[in-house]
Length: 203
Image 1 (cartoon, rainbow, N blue to C red):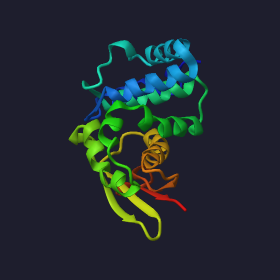
Image 2: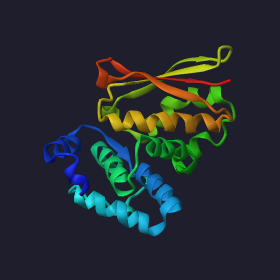
Image 3: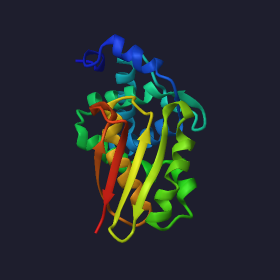
Image 4: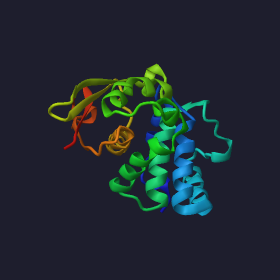
């Protein structure tokens, strides 16, 4: 069964037509992660699945600083799940690893050593990855005493797989500040809420 059999053509077309774009760096980060985990064969499998979805992606030709349709990122998640029989856990694991692999995140956060400063910079690295049409990220509250952070993503109703990915991504971001957090999505636009809300807690 190919990836195209788990998502209809109309859904693919809708994803690709969604407004907003994402930096090519996110695809190169995925490429580095897959190459480390599965080798060159894994990259070929992923590219084959993208072709099955009708949107071939040659990772060698992706430019870190170029802009690509946000829907293409979702299709890459779908292709990953099919190519390697991933569940949500594996997508979360990739999310955790992504900040450590991403050259953009490492560039932005290389001087930040505290979890507080790291999360206060969250809106900045969102803007470095997404065009304004894809919404915005805000750090709503950072409570050092009670050891939690509250993040919200507004105007970002792209696909539920992003919700899964960000459970890992924000956990990976926290590790730049030297803290291991447990994170939950407490509000979700796909469940009728006006925004996505993630709360991370640590001990």
